[in-house]
Length: 569
Ligand code: 6R9
Image 1 (spheres, rainbow, N blue to C red):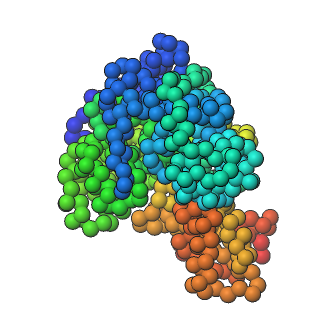
Image 2 (image 1 turned 90 degrees about the vertical axis):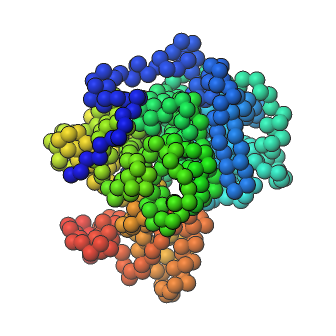
């Protein structure tokens, strides 16, 4: 096993073992102004506080897309987020209310999100690719009071079916007729720049991120302001952020990486943050790295694999020498990709492991520490991770089992919105948070990811629940039954494959395949669309009628199907 040694050590976390011995989360509290004042608010801590400490003119947000190219200082973000907060208060939003934001990346998204948090409301960012059903499910479950969105996305918001939604803030030039609509730009212009900050408790609500499980509806994972302890410290020691860094996290705020590390981590550290709007292309990404002289870059294996697959001449056109630290999250980071990173950037890519539910990084590779390509690294100081069996007993090195974490790290989710039962399922083994991932730990304490132990599909770094897609598929007039699995794919990690049995009177052809794909794309979202569809006379089911996805998977991979005793004839 080749271990990649660091070339330079970081001055942030110099010795993992020594730090781990002495670390205590209480020490981190001293980094925040509430340690002295007793007044808590994450948005204040991420923005206003830096202005008060003399960083007002420092660029906070460097935003660009195909049409816009803008810089916002910490002072500008302070003023704008105050305006957004005051606008929302004016619309009747109070502490604890939910405000959802459904729009593509843009400065207005970041401003609205900070404004919501500033007034103590709970923000819910929705990925722009969601279609009507996905949007409805989330706004309905969260009972969101206000939605911030764009004219383009409005048709996907079923207003008549959302009785709790009182106002829709439209970020655009035209305002549709109807008393629920208000204009973002008009309201912002009229809103005061006076502080909108509401002081909260560390255990008050911050953000709701919806995420898929293997069964049932998406779950609203609820995080609180206390998470800032971990956002801040992991950004320091793992992202290795320093005052003069220019940092780029490629994730959209619709996913947890795009908020914890696309917003909170860097800004709590007062670091300049790059946001690139629009879609992925190798040219665009390399250009972004070059244009801003990005020093720290946090992305995902899928993106790295797409860059790897692109014409190598493209990369040669850009000066990427500013990049000093690269990190990855979301899916297994293939050793091949780590090796590519060394070749292409002369940098080791540092894998990090965590989940929507964990709120922040838990197992990581650290600057200055050796990396074993293919391993997720070691637990963050103050985090106790282990491999346990189903009875909660810790397993010895190199034995595969449940990847679990001792409950109580600062950014742990505090509830699953309106679903205590789901929340408790994670903590069914005494004292442990059971992640749903399987892994092993080697003798040196490095963790190695092995897979999910449920049917959740990780496609291009995004978690997709098969149940949601299956439910949608059977709404199509031709579909009798559907079973959905993840099929291994060299670039996306997995692609979604659907097995479908048709209703009487329908015949399988390419046109129908295309129609069904488009149906999912339109009704759910582009990333939920099955890239492959295979028709079957009948699907394998248990006697109780559950589709046996593991049998579909075994068929697909040409592997033995295993125990079929529960299968229906
Ligand atoms: C932050 C984020 C969580 C699931 C997680 C696991 C997979 C994340 C990984 C990884 C292998 C890594 N995952 N990081 N698998 N190596 N370094 O991705 O949150 O969208 O909730 O996904 O992603 O299966 O359980 P989320």
